[in-house]
Length: 294
Ligand SMILES: C[S@@+](CC[C@H](N)C(=O)[O-])C[C@H]1O[C@@H](n2cnc3c(N)ncnc32)[C@H](O)[C@@H]1O
Figure 1 (cartoon, rainbow, N blue to C red):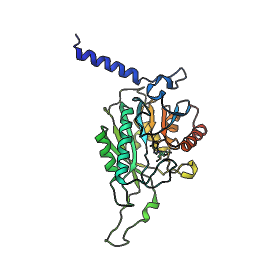
Figure 2: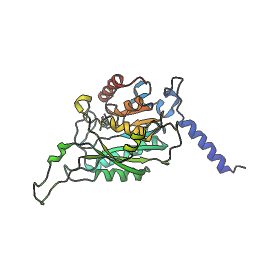
Figure 3: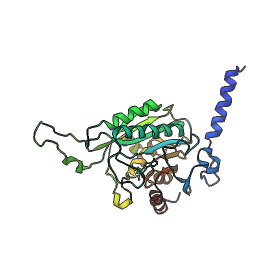
Figure 4: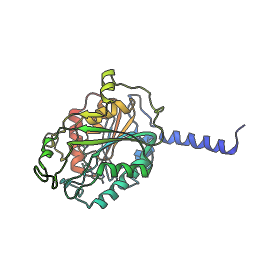
């Protein structure tokens, strides 16, 4: 015997399953028309299992529904990088406000078991010391994301080691860690029971990457043609460790398309969002030349 509440709950669960269901065609490619969350969004480019949208992460109507199984992203750091379409030199309060808005939108677009790998700075030293990593982690949790762990990315960036503050004096020395954070968050449940349940990570990779100190170099801006790309290693490890094959991997600050390219090259669906049309074009060309036969 069902009581009314149980019946209502079952109907709700069924509706939610239908809404979230993403249909793959006979070639195992995502049929975007079948995915209500994506079908009305401003598509810039689609190629096999890569979908790049030219739009604004601050606009909550860009996507209408939950669709992401894994979010891997690196937002602008507010360090005065000369991007084409956004000001990267906000006051700290404005920057935290921007952070609140985009992280809240991603929460709406995330499925129940979505994991969120957030690459952010540890701290800020120029123009006043700020605990950026800690502040953004608190904001994400206030929005509803649950905290799981933090990976420290040792990027071996030695150029940042020259701002000493007071040289050989205790008057005002600066301590600068040449690392960035990859904060691991999730929406509702950490245990992942939705999706194909197929993992494609090797024993060695699993052992190496569950050690939360990741060491690899940054990417060359010149080679990629974008002012702040991250290296393929970052989304590659995140995708293999935290998602199943066929999962939808979303990057709301897609830039040169590193995450979506890596997703598609590893049997996932890559969905990117990027505000700047010029960077969308950089990503399109890169995907066409660097993607494996998917
Ligand atoms: C740090 S870069 C990301 C680079 C990317 N991880 C890569 O490997 O190329 C941040 C990107 O966010 C984009 N962006 C800034 N504000 C945005 C917004 N409101 N909506 C969507 N994209 C935005 C910028 O144009 C820039 O390409």
